[in-house]
Length: 359
Ligand code: DCP
Ligand code: MG
Image (cartoon, rainbow, N blue to C red; front, side):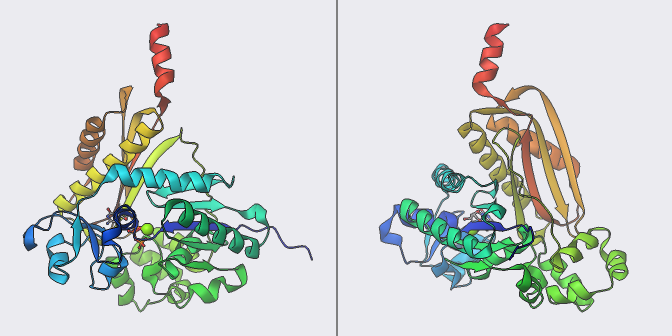
């Protein structure tokens, strides 16, 4: 039987990534509630939780929660400051394993990536490959991940989150709508608490409700962004796995759990993104000339702003200063759902040096 050409996308996301790396490094804290983030200072600390172990999640602790609140929920948790170089190293090892399978790969954050495995030809083969990837990541790196597979990127991402931690969920095209329809709309990446509440107001609770809603009323309420949102709810998602060869751009994004206009939270998040893109840049021996920030407000309105420097650089201070300057020019008092930072117009450091010495 000839099967029609179809896409098979895998999404991998590491489980409680920073906390798992810490627990791997320190056997004595394994199995304990571990919180990575700001110093709790006996409940008086400022700043937020970066992530926490699943044991800490049982106490109600979550990413982006004020560290003072985490301390109230579980004062005896192990609180650790982030060790970014360690996580960047572990991330590079995960990505190298994924890369070794030879499929188009798109890293989307420090701990997640898409693979386009369409050429495998069947979802059962994709399931086997996913199991093998999970086993390899666990044996070589001592870390667990969750994988989702499906006919599009969004469903693969929703599926990887479906049975966390250590999960594997494969959604075949025939099961796509029955999988998506009963899920809360919040499961769609990009829909936070605020949009969820706005959708609730018009009676949309599940992805199925969103799929069936009158599109004109949706556009009237949420703008043109509603069109692609409803398409996703209907399982229509043609977005490609964008392979970057490490030379086109280096980017990171973060979606807030709750839309925020808290300038301290926004500023600290931008610092984290700056640190992460800088690490990738240095690891790849690259310099950049163009820096672009992306700000998505509540209601799916997205703004980007870019600046191109006269010379390539890999200076973290330049990245941070430039990102903050653009941020100041972009944000107003609206609440923000997502922040992104991209470095492009990349050049290899050694190439540039050759160019300079040839002058
Ligand atoms: N992160 C952060 N601040 C956030 C969210 C995440 O600093 N608000 C960092 C810490 C996480 C890492 O990014 O370990 C990956 O983010 P995930 O959303 O994938 O969260 P985890 O991997 O920690 O947990 P999960 O098992 O839910 O994927
Ligand atoms: Mg993760």
